[in-house]
Image 1: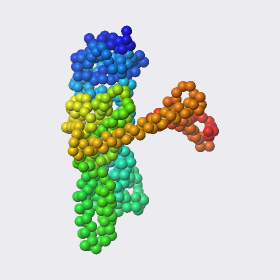
Image 2 (image 1 turned 90 degrees about the vertical axis):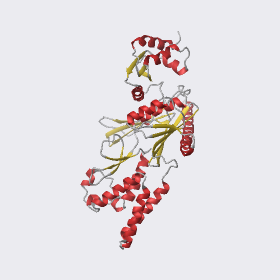
Image 3 (image 1 turned 135 degrees about the vertical axis):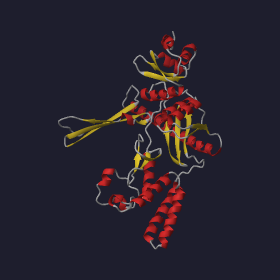
Image 4 (image 1 turned 90 degrees about the horizontal axis):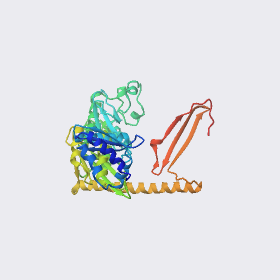
Length: 440
């Protein structure tokens, strides 16, 4: 009996009990761990394919050889099965699935619309407060930069409610002209509200309209011989011009779109995601999904898209550089999730193709850097093996340190380094409960 026959026998026993409906199946090993999650339009037909096919690819053979149990969950339709599959892959992180390693939420910029004095803030997580959300931004750095620019031009407060209500005098942001001082009544409600509205227009891509209004106000102030106000407006226009010249305006006029490009080399893949909102490039992020070397880009991108958008808002347009598996089903599922029409296209010519080409170039460069760093790290581990004459191969290094304040409040910390660099999810902090401690 071949090793894969073990899994086939498990499936054969379960087949008569499985209903002919859409759903998700989970293959489980002898330890009780889920090592593969799959979805199907018709569960029995999909599972029969594992039994009937005489020759499978190596990955499938290994998967079947380790399968001791199978569990199913039926769904009302195929779209629901696709969403459940993405959710379960994130939950169980099965070894035979394509895995999205880094899946943090992206920052947004939030401006409240219910407050008397709206606050400008960076926001992550659920959008459970009334107001305007702008994003996503690819990094906290790009969101912070945008907030700083909005402060500089429109002088909107960034302090929290507690600080705002208890201030007796303006903070340093007022002194450096980054805030108009609403906390101490240095600006009236109407003027502050106009500044907030202008900031919303600006971040929505209507900067030319703002510039015209500021120029008109500056001329009016000059005619009234109010040169102090005119100089303030002049500085705002100057800052606006600097920002406009540095902003990455995209030639494809993408108002609400994500550009996703994949590049594969040496059995590894980098997927680059560019975020375009209000005709501006709001940054990009690199991802290195875990997969078998023989899996093709179409399959990798399909799995990536569903896992990526499982807990994120989907833009109206998603532009790719490769055809993907189940494209129509993914469109239908994401449209149902967002309650709006989502379009997934493959850019082949024109300005959109240029944008995709840029994303693919970034993916290639990021992957080359990743491969180079991984190779260097492997050489470092080999050097340690030789230096200390270690027989077993090292793949992970843990570094510990501890500290205390004159023998009290002892704490410890651990950082971890692997072949892919620092492994931050394995970092730990320890509270050390002792009567006394000595500094190491």
